[in-house]
Length: 402
Image 1 (spheres, rainbow, N blue to C red):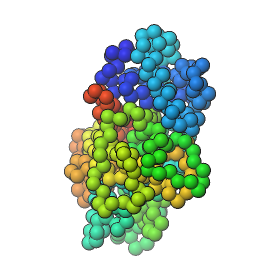
Image 2 (tube, rainbow, N blue to C red):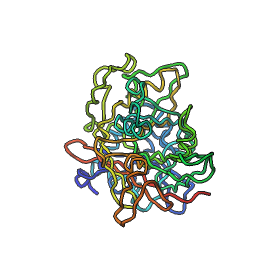
Image 3 (cartoon, one colour):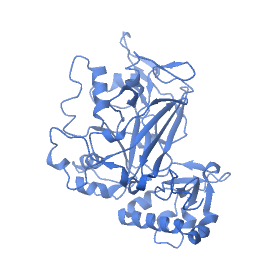
Image 4 (cartoon, rainbow, N blue to C red):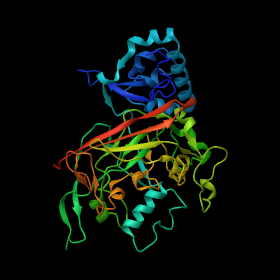
């Protein structure tokens, strides 16, 4: 495709997401790539001789992430300039591979993983479900970005099957806990943020500094075993109900590609404490609309632009106690939900904890996920001059418990 042909392509030169791939028959040779339309550019080969060659030599983005925002901008600018030029594009042609002919891999070594809870609509819905006679939001919710530390080793790339987790649960009619496969397996449609630039233990990243550590975003599905979670989470929060698998898209969208998608945050009332306040444009939301499909049926279109907490506030809060950042850290937004019932980002909300089943196009109904179900999350955002930015999908199929 020419540069002109890519103008309105969701993966055009205005986007250029990063991933990792291998060629058929050579799964052990994983290389970094940038997506250009429907092709993947081999960055190890294309970047040879450039200032970023060493960072692009390996199978993950972590070395590039460590170089920081100046290097990220330099590489992106070089790619855009070279690929927009007919001669430059011809020179790189031998390093382009059709996306449908390659195997995609997890593009980063996830160092630490944190999941936040940044949607007021989602938190309110969950509160109404679990505390029908109490306040929907807990007293701390509007004072700090609530989150929990997850298990980085079970973050898997899009397309990886998800085995139904087994654990201990106790239903409302069970006289005692029982052990077995989860019967309330759920999804959470989220946005994941990829972090670059290490910091030492004992330091803090301010809201204004946080954006310099935000490399990009990827769609994220935080699979959740609601029955295991409900029994275990008091008093210490999510554990085995969350740690069996979390799926992330194979292509990471640079933050620079989302400049036209930045929007103001909703009004934060009460005003957060000073360490969560930034200057200038360091507090922002993102005009990204997600779409959730269950076995091909669209069941929800959650809007990210209504999220209460900025990603910079999440990152600042994560480090305010002196916790270190590592290049390759990943933090997720928490479930994205909107004001309308068809904008809820989890089955827990969509079916109101199973009381209101949803009907799929094949006539079957769901309260929670069944074995064999496939969940696919896609998203779009506005790009420069109205060009679309299409975030790469995250998809997974549920397999029976082992």
